[in-house]
Image 1: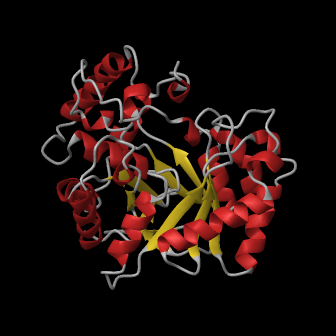
Image 2: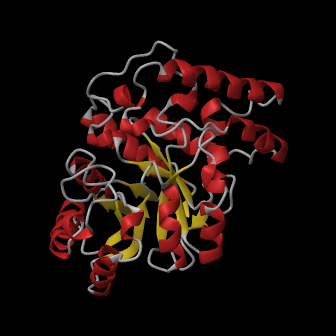
Length: 328
């Protein structure tokens, strides 16, 4: 497992990180023993970075992770997220930070995160979403700074709102955050335009999420695949989205075939290696629901980087498809 630095003054983290959403239950039925086995297998494979959130099963993911780490001797960094208080997701331009991320709310929420993770200091606390309406008065981040001074938080981050990822660029340039978590994959290449160059300029750590486009870029789904109602992807791939996605996934597979790389890389390998290609990326977090998935994903880190010609070819798959999370 290779490692990269998480922000200019941050720790070294594994290139592949463990994404804790699925073990919280948001991706349909999840067996507890599978969750535990997945975490152990990931750590055995060299993973030392885990990303979770309150919203992943109302803290269930955090508690499972904490229990597993008590059984391990390795030093593993855990990032978690505080969601905004009740209101529209993502926050609208009309939302006031006082109503969504007040000081009292943030303090109480961080205490719950500490309790769930059974720790005295959170390695990385991220606000789970944001709006550029708060950029000129980013008081929630100043509250997190105070919590850091009190020893409750180490690094501070923001997970980008899906529809406006560049809203965090001002925060990066103002030195208010150590880390950003972004969507970046073969279909969603917009961060290459400005966000990643600014991360390099400012020394901001970058966590990539959705590198496999919620599983579609593994190539394992047919165009008529249906997810259960308890799996958020039933909404993400609503209507004819899966059919359109599978058609484009086949085109990516065709590129892999044309380059004669199918014996070296699976489609999932290709997708993860693409997400790791920019040097500004610190780690790519991947959902792992069982030991087999953990072993497959950690294996990817041991493969050679993609040829530059392949990276260039994949540029043609940039897909301006709007914001699917909103139900379009």
